[in-house]
Length: 330
Image (cartoon, rainbow, N blue to C red; front, side, top):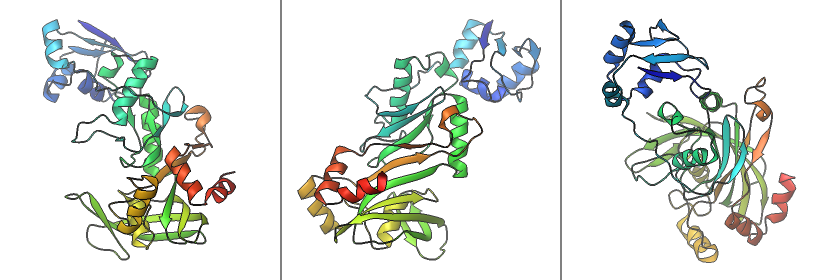
């Protein structure tokens, strides 16, 4: 017989979802059969699997050790180690300033992503244990392109993951970015269009009018200052589509500095030669949380900012945009 007690990271989910993670190699039919036969019980009673788990609930599996080992598939959660730039942390969530060049989530390249680094960080700090990782996996809730730097929110607990996922899904967290574009822009502008993705080449196209399979996009940009050649912009995403800022601004004639996919080749060549810039200069610099009636504690009604990378700061200075940058962020 195996016995498990539900902790804070596991509470709030359906019993059958928990069992699917605990017995990851077991067919669903086997799990429901064991529930019907009371070989799996919840608080000593027969369960159907649709119960919502609470902290302190007791689960018992009346299995042999061989059966449990066969179906548990005790596979260690992927983790990696690096020094993370933590902007904010509480019991449930973690806000990280991701550097350019780091994946937000795992992909087919198999290189470590922020998800693995967060898991390693939480294990090192004792925020999660190996045992908890059997039924709970920390994850990030907003995704940045590999070569975009800035704020990424991660859930340390199931409650944190659920709350953040709902906020991002409902677009009640405001996401602001900083970038430098080619050209001169004046005055806040709200631009709209339709974005269509080509998965084969991982590239999107923006259209003024609706086309088949295209999704609506909305982007708001506010110029902070210009030197007559380039403009420092604050960009707020109303929608959050793949490559939205990069493609949307480029479609308006204002490509991002350093953007090899949607940018201006000659402009990028000069930036690479002068600054050593090898990627788009785009930084997710702030997340603003709404009032949440106490959810996630002191996060309510607060804006968090991620410091600009050194190269971004250097380019702002060299492009004579430093004064307008500080004036607008004070």
